Length: 131
Length: 129
Image (cartoon, rainbow over all chains, first blue to last red):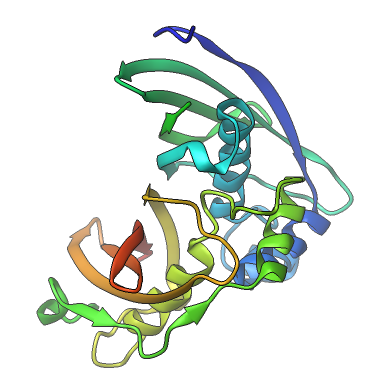
């Protein structure tokens, strides 16, 4: 029985440059700020950053794992508040957690939190699922 | 700067887009998702963001895509996308404002299959000053 206040157990995903390249190819977003360190720095970024939509896709995976697959997800949203910074030859964390905030009929609203290196990266993120 | 006349306009994608299993497989592989029969919830961005880029970078609209960062994103999913789905994509410039020199544009994209709405997405894009 799912109730308001239920916690979705925290999960940690790990991102590296190879994952960014794979996501660039899978999504079609080949912006060099996600692959080329010199370019990223030249436009004022601290280093290569992950695609915001990769962060969101991983949070989506967190939701579908809990909800029983992609079929369950009806709405999904989030704001990109800080980038996930991905230095070469490193694996950086994306730490995701959630809480059930509303249940209306068969629709369950989950509020989601995502941070990397202790910094909140996704804000105002929620999903509506039917479980 | 965005042409103010473009706000509220809807642009129909010229060609329909058919989703292949290999595209879904590649997207799932990044996420270590083993069930590849359904596309993950954010998969539609592969179709809609490219279309938004095409529309907004049109000289008549005038957005400088090279300075765009993604502000926020929302999906409304009627049913998951599967391989073989053929979509017509239309994009509407729903909102536009300038704040602290940054242009903020919200684009809604709708994916229709045989006249039926399958996914709507809202992307808020920020053009840095």
